[in-house]
Length: 364
Image: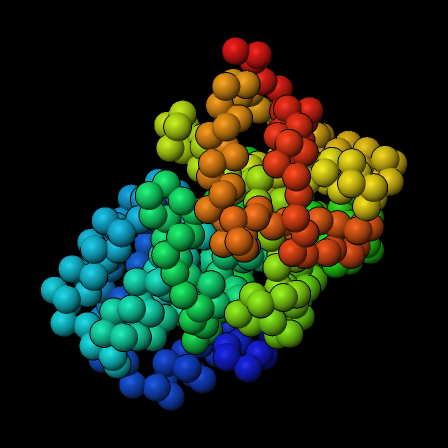
């Protein structure tokens, strides 16, 4: 078992943590009610395993919601709050967010504002939530079709990383998380990038990789090293948004304009291709570096089709990005593989060209 102790929370790796969770956390703290927040998928595939490992509670309550990014909204939050009120949850209650990024993002937000603050812990069940969404203190919901528009910073009390939950995931869900791991390599750690690159070209199945846990641990450690220096995202933490300026816009476009799902990881992978192309065109990185990034990501993630006339809609989503300042779209762009710049302004036409040149689209 490995432990990352941080100022505001502890991240624990391994099955033994369930015992530690009971002895060092639940037995040492009084919680008036223990409430598990999950969606229909984690209830079906993860709840039984979680309860069998924890054996924590004589009595617990469940709040069950529908799954999917489109459920991460104020209406689902209202459902959560209504259930908390019905259960007479108070400030001595605790919520266990058992699920993927939607559950940990929205569960953290719902708890943070309920009675001005409810205790919660995160048990991430997807690769994406293990290495990104459940850690770092960001909680949020989508609003008016805009990603994570309403939210705040608030750390969970504990986080448990158990790779056994990954067995419940499809290959596409694994790939969704893998894209964020690739991002860590590109912005911070060239050795991680090279490790992943070899595995992609060798077609090693990530779920069965003997280095799986080490890669997850390294990814979480990278994110923690960054947020320790910049908790509120005033500077350095913005590099974690590489690929997200265009990626979030594409993800929102698919959900709210096409009524289709494009996974977060797939969207960010496309965003990283487009934003790396921008770096190349701005003469920040070499053509060979862009081609290296493109070749790795294009093996894992299919190109997507959009209409030329819809590029404007994607650009409109980008105008609401939280990094923007004075109506200027701000980017985090890699200077070289393993190092990232932030707060860079990019010409509007160059952004448009990055989408046109790197996505398959119909000229309509």
